[in-house]
Amino acid sequence: MPIQATGETAAETATRTIEVGSAIIQDKVLSWSAGFQYLLPNIVVALLVIGISVGFAWMVAKAFRRWARRRDRDNLGEVLGAFLKWVVIFLGVLIGMTIVMPSLRPGDLVAGLGVGSVAIGFAFKDILQNWLAGVLLLLRQPFRPGDQIIVRGYEGTVQRIETRATIIRTYDGRDAIIPNADVYSNPVTVNTAHDRRRDEYDLGIGYSDDIEAARRAIHAALRDLPQIEQEPAPEVLVWDLAGSSVNLRIRWWTHPRRMDVVLARSAVLQAVKQAMDRDGIDMPFPTQVMLFHDQTEEIDGVRGEQREGWPKRKTERQPRPARHIAAGDPPVREAVGGAED
Image 1 (cartoon, rainbow, N blue to C red):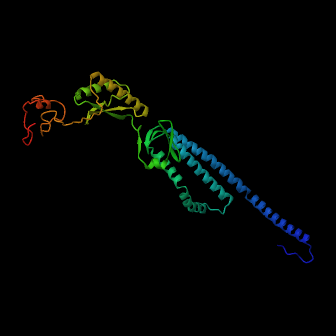
Image 2 (cartoon, one colour):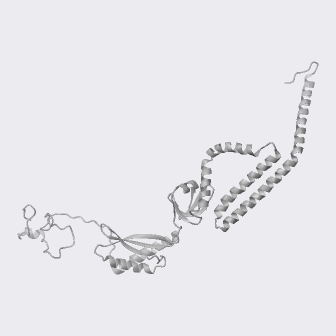
Image 3 (cartoon, rainbow, N blue to C red):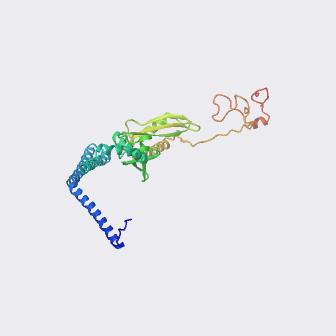
């Protein structure tokens, strides 16, 4: 607070204070103006350098995208082209700052950024991790946009690989956005990696049916199907002796895309069903046999002789029903332990 001089009124003191403050402000403005005039050429040069760097960055990004497009790597050109553009702009701004402020040394600035990058790295760890994983995916190219893949339970067509995530269009028309780090660190099945893809189906026939006849019928049904590949030829293998059927595994090759696989499977199942019906080959549904040993035959309860269902004996005399025994007919043989049936 200014000290009031002897003999001065309060108004005179306030006026003198204002004049002193105005003089200080004018000196500061004049010094700034002189400094600005001194730095004006440097500022103009710095702006020119930054403008040139921006134009050069745009040309670098465009050239890189054109180079990637010629090699069918459009996605890589978009991601790395944008990264190179910002690197060139950053270098241009850094040079411009050193022109305006000659005392600023780029080494000190880079060192300061290096210390600060540790904190930035912790704060944006997930973003940086996904960006690096996206760059590695684009460089190694295990799959491309347009491929059909399965990753983390999501199956569909790859739309694009961005700096943060991979976009997959599922077969039901939805978009699955999967972080690049998850795609890079988890198993990925690429369904369209090759020109052909094998599919299979298990078909059960009756135990009393001729296996070779069923195989011939299936081969004939698949021979002229346009939806499947004839080279390699379809296969019909005996795969399992199940509880109520002999299972045949049918394997065929088709184009790898999902629509081709679905249409081929539909055509194969229809053709096989029609062939089985035409040749009279049974396709049994699961059945369960329950045997109640209630002494309905004379050998029921005799170890080693009791029948466990069909078929009947062809060379020996058939066992008599239990009701004939009740009528007084003599027994066929004795049961184990000497007891009669």
